[in-house]
Image 1 (cartoon, rainbow, N blue to C red):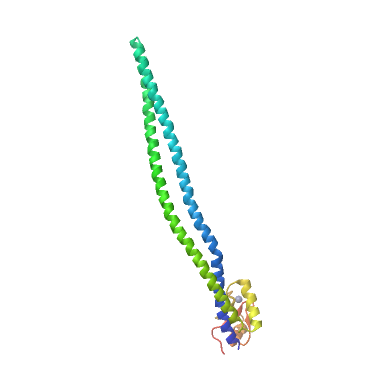
Image 2: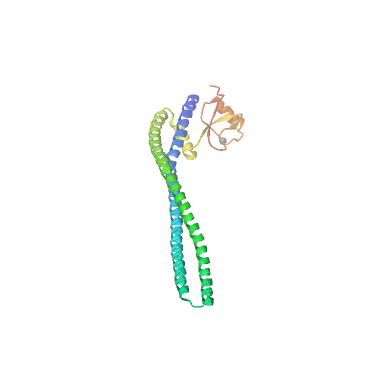
Length: 238
Ligand SMILES: [Zn+2]
């Protein structure tokens, strides 16, 4: 009698375990969707950062170009002034002044070139990141669709499993079913466990020989004194 109940209850337990798994998967789906969104946000953040870097570099270029222009104008102004000078000494002094400005102009142009190269490499980086974003968007969109499909699939399977489980439960005596349900709802894990070599398959404690014996006889409900799980033996005598 109990032997048959145990077999049916084991099948119900398998269904319950699958239901728990699927409920967990379903509950984790929104988090997975959010993770995909976050991945996409990371790409956008990187692009915004690169754009800001480039903007700063472009401003540098503009500023240096203006300074460059100012230095050139100053040099031509000084050259014009130089023409009006009367003495060699004045002329030489002016020449030195011009040389100082020219030196600064040279330094400025080096910096200007560097800034222009920075703008170029940041532009390249930005193009690369935009390409990456586009690919990521497509991949993530696909993954999100898969998540939606999976969600529907799991919901359908869950409904079917729950129906099957409801039908299967009608064949279990109420005392057994309520004891099992109480245990399963508490642990959400295996609560009908086998006795192997006199050890509880749930908590792995050594069971008294009388309990192991009862499990083998399979005449009534046997539970573990330590963890409260229901016990059965793979070597039942019935
Ligand atoms: Zn136990």
